[in-house]
Figure (cartoon, rainbow, N blue to C red):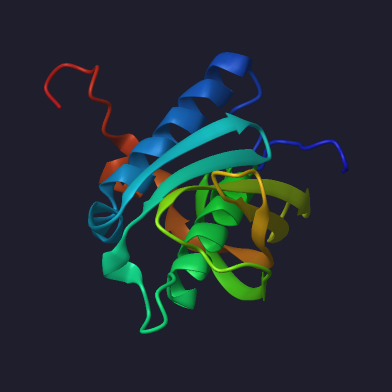
Length: 167
């Protein structure tokens, strides 16, 4: 993997990078869709994310395993947040995503690991994989993400800090 570099230069210090990572985690938690799932995002380091996700039977298809939309949700989120660690000024948008299903997802904890692959300016490529509680890879994906016109600083989930007074 190439050495990651910050997207705008504004977050060059490790303290600034850590603030950016925590803000991305808050942004994930603020998205209404994520209230529907028992999940927790952790930005591990620049270019890497980890999403722990609890699979329950309410997301199963008729044959008793998680529907493919769940694979996409976890893989896309992990890859997206890994890529957005490098874009410190703009929200990224998924422009394409390729999925590979290797094993049915059953009830229990699944972890999606995201990793930035390439791109530092306008287009980013990141990959992710799903691992079940037994440690088996159950899915994998690669996504392309484009810098949007949406400033991260304009998103309340990104800017709100629970430790700040008046927030």
